[in-house]
Image 1 (cartoon, rainbow, N blue to C red):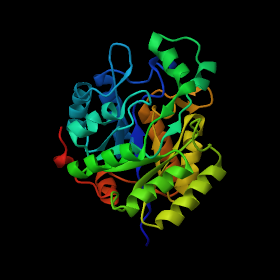
Image 2 (cartoon, rainbow, N blue to C red; image 1 turned 135 degrees about the horizontal axis):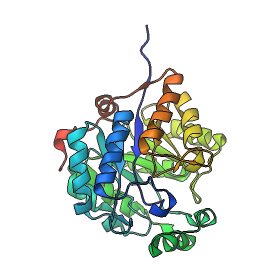
Image 3 (cartoon, helix red, strand yellow; image 1 turned 120 degrees about the vertical axis):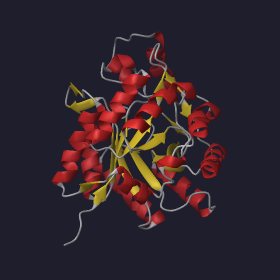
Image 4 (cartoon, rainbow, N blue to C red; image 1 turned 180 degrees about the vertical axis):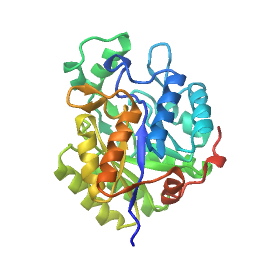
Length: 310
């Protein structure tokens, strides 16, 4: 009897897109981030994608000292793969964004595969009241923002990863980002199989329609054949629906409060674990088996938790 196909669930626990005023359930302090991540792992997430926030006001931060407390707690409580951001916030310099991954040498890190407009300002139409002055300005500033990820930037991060044994979740927000990834593979700076995170629904990137997902898949197949790991990230209300479509086509999936605050129409998700449980139900209904952390490490050819710097 054929074994079930396995799908990796990544949970993006907190991030730079949403602000603390948007949901009381968004983890901010190190203890909150650790608790949220451990809960997501217990619910079935094999990979935990992690940002840090300043506990005073919830502002995104790439200060390694803010990462260490929750990294240690998560590693002690789970065997999940830790995936650290090199995206940080679009408002940060590349050098600032790279600090946590350089310092902690994780098994996996995110890597944005091209410069792009990154429009968060439409959220101002939905959220009117903010706790901190920086939150409104954070969204407003995205009207005149290019999220910088030049070829020089990407090459620097790839070489850093190679030195540390860190592999990457290649975040592809548009078709051109797939071609950028193919360029670096042709130069020998990316090893197979690449872990491609297709991101849908961010203003400035590819849209959230099923036709967009199909276009991304066809292009990846043409460029990389069958030797890649594909994952689906649908922003906002598109999170579960696009993940379900992708999973039916052979994709891994990503959920979490970084990408969407919602669990249903007009209903805030109470936790990252709730979103993980929801997508796990979808995967199992499709007769897919949720990959364990050990299976995810094998599928992504990672170096192992014993070789990280924390």
